[in-house]
Image (tube, rainbow, N blue to C red; front, side, top):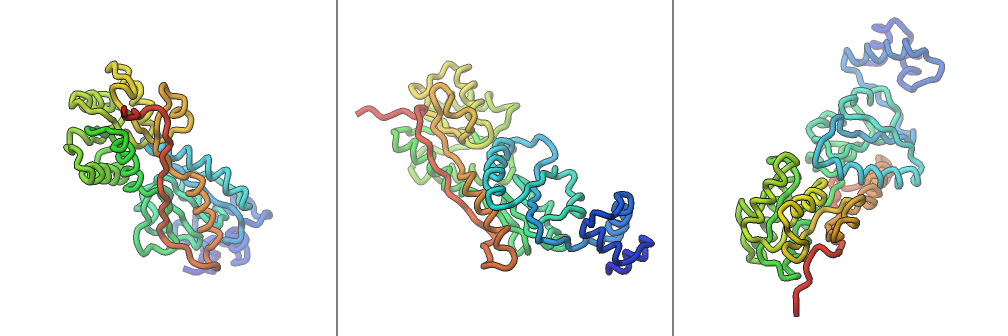
Length: 320
């Protein structure tokens, strides 16, 4: 369908439709809504200008765990990096994503979103979409992903525990069973344990969320572990609480590594050793992709950054 056909259906001139789609300030709000409603009803998606320096950040519409912690830290990094690059930010909940049809933007960022929700992106928009903490489907034009190297991060944690003398490591991964990142992390933990010839079983490496997290930790402790690795979400907070309930001292009875929660981990008792994502690096890659699109050298569709390890006091130091 062409712009002229939309104009005929809306009962206005093609010039008026063009001004509506370009957000001309002299267009009445009721007329703008009328034209957009006609366009939407007939599957017409205007190619909005990408010359604007607006970036839309798409957030989950509901409280979705365990990505909330990741979402908060990525958002903090994006709000630091993007304005310094001259971008303006607009926040949009994913359950209101249809509003993108009437927003001027040069790029969009979706944090922790299901890639399937954006499989028609390139048909609707000429601007790039960057998925953070999720994998971009292959060969999907204008859709990119930036994420952390989960396999490297899990191996980093298991390796540190092994180097400190831990020989029976339990792991509880924060997330829903079958969810993408949780399964990637579980497989990576299993591989890291096997590579060091450490015990591996379904009882030792489990996935859990708030409702059963403390119960699972209790079951893992009964296996006489000497270390507990708890990646994902706000796991460090819940793990500290669970270990206190079971009268386990950290690190004397059990060494602990968690995922970094900037508002908690360093203030735990004792301060928690953590793996952490490079949130500022992820935000920088987002800006690089959007700035490079479409005229500069093409960016890779998928970019991955390593985790780093923050060594604190929750992992024991082997005795000489």
